[in-house]
Every structure is written in C-alpha cells, then in structure tokens.
Image (cartoon, rainbow, N blue to C red; front, side):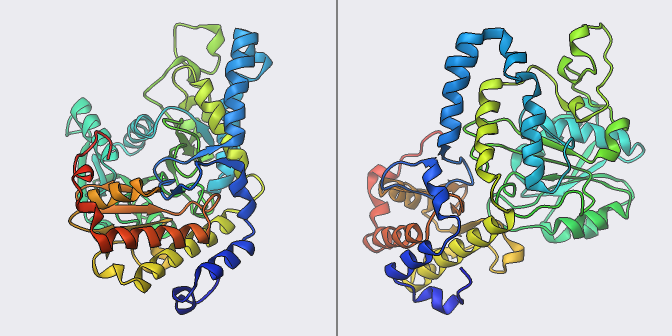
Length: 421
C-alpha cells in the first residue's frame, strides 16, 4: 500500500488482487454482513452492518429485553452502557477513559457544548465557524441565538482559509468540523486549536467524518470539547447515538443546560433539585436508547484489535488507487475533483463535481456501486478500510467508466429525485 502514484495508475486487476492479498486488514471484511456483488462506497454516510452488531441486537431484543425485562438495567449493565461505549470511542480519538460519553445526537450534544462554552467565556458573544460547515452545526447555533438573543450569542461564518484571521477578542467559541462533508478538506486540529486557545477561545470540534479512519489525539492536541456520530465510519447503524468528549480538567466546572435525570449525580434518589454528576456522566440527559447503543457498542469491537494508523494508511491507499484509475480511464476530464491531493489535507473520502452528479450517482447505484450525492453537484465516495478492497476500487471505476462512456445517467429513470439524496 505504499506504491508510487505512477505504479498505482498502471495497476491491473491482478495487481489489485495482489494488493488485497498483502492487506493486513483484509480479514476484517468477513466480519461484516455485505450484500453480494455490491461495492459500498458510502460508509462515510452510513456504515454497513457488522455481524457482531447483528448478533448483539438479537441478544438485546430477544433475551435481555424479551426475557429479563427491567432487571436488565442491572443484570446486563444497561445503566453503564453510555460510559462503556464512550470508553471504546475514547481509544479511537486519543482521549482517556472517563472523557467520552455516548448519548443523544451530534445536534443535541452541540447545543450542550455551545451553551457551556458561552458560559465559560462570559463577556464574549461570538461563535465562529466556516460558512460551509455541516448545516446542522450552523442551525443549532442559530437556534441558540434565537433562544438567548444576539447580546449573548451571535454566529459569524467565514471561508475555511479565513478562520485564523477571523478570530477576535469577541470570539467566545470556535466550532469547526475537522473533515468537510462536501469537499473532504481536513483541518489541522492541533494548529487551529493552539491558535484559538492563545486568544482565549474555547474550541469545539465535530469529528463526524474523522472518527474511525483518522488518527486523533484529543489530549495531546489540547482539545477542549468534541462531538462525533456513531453511524458513519463506526458502523453503529442508522441513527446510532453520538458522543461527547470533554477534557477532564473541565468536568468540575461545567453547567450543562439539558439537565435531565440521567445527568444527576444520584438519579435514583429522585430529588426534586438538580445536582450534576461531577464526571462525564453529567452530559447525559434522558434514558439511554439501549437497543441502538448496544448495537454501536458491539460494532466498536471491530476496532479493538487494530491501530487507527493502519486504518488511515489503507483508506488513503484505496482513495489514491481509485483516483488513479479514474485518471487512467480519462474520467477526470468530466469529473472535477474537489478533494485536496495532499494526504494531510483530506479525510477518507473523494468528492467530484459534475452538472449531473445526482443522475450519475443513481446510475452507479443501479450498477451496484453505492456512493452518494451532495447538493448542488457533488458525487462523494467514502473509503472505509475495514470492508473495502483494492479489487472493489478497480471494479467500481470500471462500472463508472461504462456509465460515463454510454451516458447511461441520462436515462429518464435516473432523473427523479428521492426524499433522501
């Protein structure tokens, strides 16, 4: 997986198969339930089903809930599941045990963190982000602004390359997503965090497109807070719970606004007055979604015997091979690459623009190559290293080339847009 780009360009199907035979992660493919003949390049949007997760779902529904009923909160440690799952995620993002909790969604968790950060930085009112951040991150900020007013919270957005210069004495919070969902461009977390903190700014990172495929070092990089989701590269299933990271140094000084009973230091004393748990558990709100969280917990076992650096190496190699095959078939004259070339500047995806990107994506899906479309004109390919192979890359590009050459995407059946694109 360290071949030069010229060697990769000239790789044949036999070469791809040989690369797979040398892949130390190849056996991981067998741990997923994958449809036959389908090449799945959308794990950056929804990961496929791990067999262990399927088995856990059946166990939780049929045995734990089905037979043991409410006793499962103690008998099967349901009550500890948010922390247990959080600690597994902590290993993947360079955090310590007790610094990550699994709960709610990214949107809800961002609301908690933004409110906390504004309280920590009283006297400052600005939340700074980039103008093409994932929309939900911006929407949550707009909602907080509507709740507390502009004298307490105002959103300022700028292009990614203007972030550092846009920080001011009024900036309370910097909220950024490490990997841009459209382009795949990647921020340098350490550099940006240090620059912001030197100006007294609290930093919140969205790791939705990073966790599980990129080496992350929350503690070593001095990150204040972060959020991430469980259903993309972590393969936790549709709508899987998200997670919160909070550096341990802050735990005693937080005031989490969604003060639900599970965040209470003694929830089963049923006190009428709220008193936050002093640990990461204070980020809990309502009762945890045990079935979906159990599925995510089992899915995370896929990562326990691999290093994130191995995942990063393979993801980049798959993406480089994919793009080289596009170039070899002269497809890059029609598909305009939006993702940076340098490895340090991108995540585990490649994005290409085309005026008929949606239709091309639908034609690919019909050819059993599943990618996704992002408005207005982006086809996005994700490179999940646990279940994809170099042979998959070769075949996927071959099918794409056939579609482009025949202009099959112009067929009427590919023109109608579904609710989910």
